[in-house]
Each structure stands twice: as C-alpha cells, then as structure tokens.
Length: 159
Image (cartoon, rainbow, N blue to C red; front, side, top):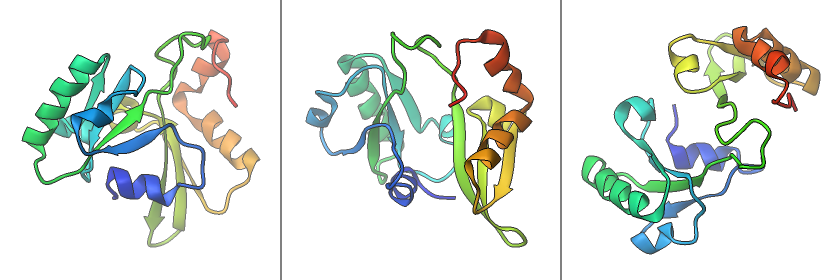
C-alpha cells in the first residue's frame, strides 16, 4: 500500500483533481472549498483520521493544526473536491475508488468500486488483470452491486 503522494506520483500521467503539498498556512489560500486535507500515511485514512473535509479557510486552518498534531512526521496534502454545484449529480456526486494492486498470482490488477465505506464494509469492488481496455472498465463498473445507482437515478453519467 502506498501513501498519498506516492500514489499521486504513480498515476501522474492520468488526469487528477488538483492537489499540492501543504508547507504552510499560506498554501491553503487560493484553494477552492470544499477541499480535503490528507496526511501522507499508509492505511485507511478515514479510519485513522488522516483525511478531513474543509468547507472554508478557517476550517482548513483548524484541520491543518489537527493534522500536524496527529501526524507530526507526515506530509500533509490539500486536494480539491471533485464536485460542482452545476453537476446534475449534486454537490456530493458518487464517490468511486480506482486503484492498482500487485497480486503474486495474477500480477498487476486494476481495482474499481464505490468509494469510502462501500469499498471497506460492503467490499463492492471489481478487479481485472492489467492490461485492460475501455470495455473491461465498463464491465467492471457494471459488475458492482451498486451499479443500479447509475441507471435508476438518471443523474450520473457512467463516463
């Protein structure tokens, strides 16, 4: 398992939401809200308290103090939230997880699933051995138990 920065560097050729290393409180300014602060730790960041949502600058400053206290030896990253008031899915959208896993038998695997608690508790994820093509990824999403969210609500674009 990789830390936040190492993970972002691994997939830097892919389009990602804006992020940067926070070195001072000044780095929090000019970032849109909501955003997230993440400690560069290995493990489930939510359960560790290593990811905090910030709705405004004051909250970001308070959360940065909390992060420095809880994770004094780790870098802190600020990451924009990929949501928009103009998004038909609403400001919350659908949280998805996309990752890579090295397996001793199957080699490198792509992991796709519903994010957050759905990946951890419900284990609603799909795996495919790399390399994959677009149709494989579409099939992975359709394999998810929660896939009907895309078809029933009509607000979420599968693309």
